[in-house]
Amino acid sequence: MTDLQSHHNLLERYQAVKNQVQELADNHGHRVQLLAVSKRHSTESIEQLHKAGQKAFGENYVQEGVEKAQALSHLEIEWHFIGPIQSNKSRQVAEHFHWVHTIDREKIAKRLNDQRPEHLNNLNVLIQVNISEQDSKSGIHLSEVNTLAEAISQLPNLTLRGLMCIPAPLDDTQLEHEFTAMRKTYEELKQNHPSVDTLSMGMSQDLELAIKCGSNMVRIGTAIFGARH
Ligand SMILES: *Cc1c(COP(=O)(O)O)cnc(C)c1O
Image (tube, rainbow, N blue to C red; front, side):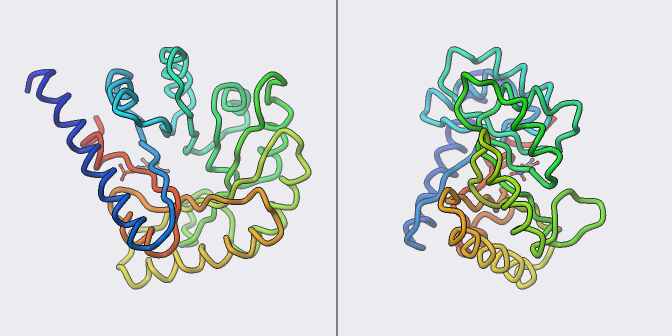
């Protein structure tokens, strides 16, 4: 494939995903933000999508994300960190990202708060819920959300925006059950924390069900960029 062809394919896939998300959002009567997950994809692809109107990009690996943010600092991009955070990498996350989707302990929240540079706006954070209760996965139990939310709301350089989850591979019935439980906790959280407005759930495989269950931010990689290298 020539560069020109792959460029067209990228933009076509992007438009198709954007249209699909818009249509689902319209059907369900709420807004849905599209986060383009660009991990393991080139800065050139990000630049092309940015030119086509995409402003928010998600990265999983600190080093890769920081390098891309620096290489593309001339563009107005909103960078979302969506991977696991190790303590020794939190400073780079606090300095280079606008959002973090994967807060699952107070210690990390405090580090990000302390390390957020003064000249930047608050870091927007989501609490990651281990909705399928997988041993191998990051995230907290739904019953622990209120306590962690309370702790985050005391940190002046962070703004609590909501919840995020990465479900296990499940059949649609089970998945709908888990998405619905997320939605319920999200609605309750909103009552106590007026800054909460984001429910980040749904990826390439399950965006339709996620939006049906109330997601207002979907994180899409493969359906836009194709397979990762
Ligand atoms: C990679 C990744 C995505 C995107 O997954 P696709 O299946 O490629 O759409 C979304 N969220 C998180 C947390 C990811 O790590």
